[in-house]
Length: 58
Image 1: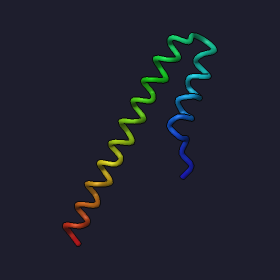
Image 2: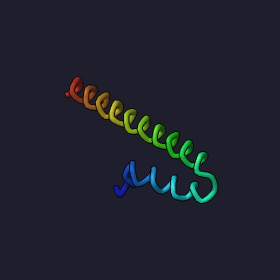
Image 3: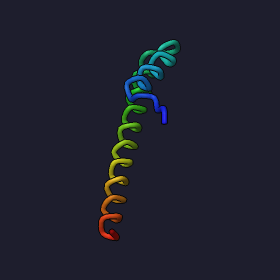
């Protein structure tokens, strides 16, 4: 899977939005970074839960 790295995503969004309004760009990029961070944390928790279930069943 070729995912875009977190910092690359932040920079990409920032670069695109800076062309319009830097304040909005900074806010949007920070929000996107928070969303990505949350999703990565959720994915890790899901992975741990699955491993625990497999361990209990195994």
